[in-house]
Length: 181
Image (cartoon, rainbow, N blue to C red; front, side, top):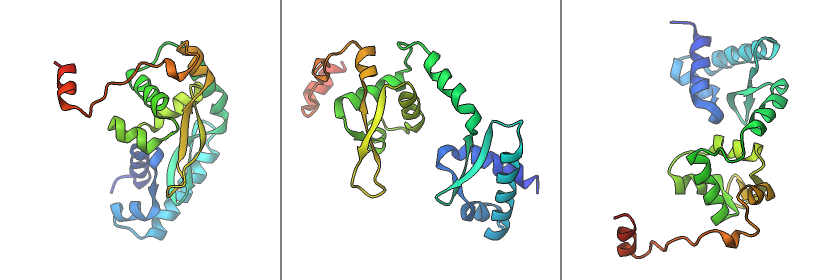
């Protein structure tokens, strides 16, 4: 078999923020969980000690994932602050609109509306101070609720969210069809 550590590294990269459990990785490679945990702990140590790398391998809640090292934080903050405030991707604008209209709202609710994941976009919007966490729901897992910030209001020159355009009512299929013709 090829270098197992390199394969695990690739799978962890693909998994992103979701991470992967040692149990799942053991299943993928057909090895014992103890053997996989030993490999993962070796990788955790190697990434932590390697000063030439800006990422490290961590385990939170039983899942292993890559995160940036603490030394990267000030540069990441600068990266997101340097971007012009009016240079938003369509995905960011869509996510902002959903939050503005539906706040407070959870990530899962946003993803249900958009039909795609939005964790990275939420992190970027929080880093640019356009949205913030404003509490947690009582639902299982107690997910965060998001709302827009004063920076959002300033960026879009709004005094109140009441100034947002009214959304069409799509409960009438005839109206929806007319809108898209």
